Image 1: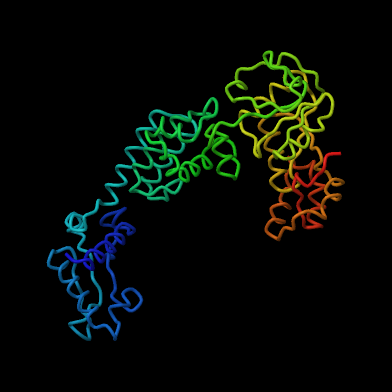
Image 2: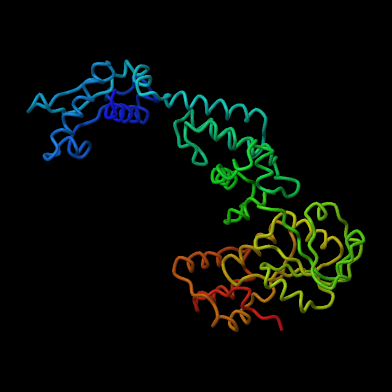
Length: 403
């Protein structure tokens, strides 16, 4: 069987798998066919390449001889094909001839994987694999962009979800180590990362950051271990951070087990960007603890912030970009910690001072920004958002100078 015959047969099988015959055999009188017209098979009608028509005639003849399809000749010429029909009574032979597994076999394999993990889990992970089973049963679109032939991918996704557990990793784990331990190959996570993120964004109990790196960090998977940077008058299990005179990097494992044993501060300031954090620490106000969030905060940094709050600090301020991302980070931090945060240097006066150095934004960005005016969690920013919509500029944190 030549290449043309292989291509034609696969095209017919694809049409069959999208037809009613596949989901409900015997319920449709319409056959599975391919018209040989100028739109569907334009090369067949190329007046400058008569050999192409002859080649396609040969290919169709091979398939007819194998009994997997029938041909209807043109009413105007017996040498021209009007259409070809797949022989639905010879489907098994057609798949064998095409050298491919049927969609039904792929779906059965995918369903078996999903059902196996559904028996082990509850919660959001169970919702994901149960949705796979339900989609296969109903013929609906599979969740997270899965395709029927991807049972191996689903297996690896489930192995990764098993390693994450119902609430993410207890600490932080480098991406390649996580991949090696859960998937048996250090680079496999990179290969399935897009699919894993789709699952997490669709089924994780709370919204994840838009940035892929930050979304993975939220569940404990990081490119490399990241230290929590802190400065100010706090003592952690005998480690006197204030005595160092600058910021200190704390490993995630230490953050998880340490206790706040002494605290001589009235407030904590969480800072979104690294440059601004160092700028703030150079002129650190008295009785202030500064905590670097690393862009979007993750669970380790929130855990440390909650320990500081439990140590007696009642005033917690957040300093970030005066833009859509900065407002979202503030709201997410407040929501995930339950703390009453105050914005710092994210007000109308600060915005007006630095707007001349700001970055212009367009209509789509303005639309996203305007939507925040309808959400109560952004009420503290409504005045500055209104001003931003007027001036059409956003201000990066690094532009703001600490006095």
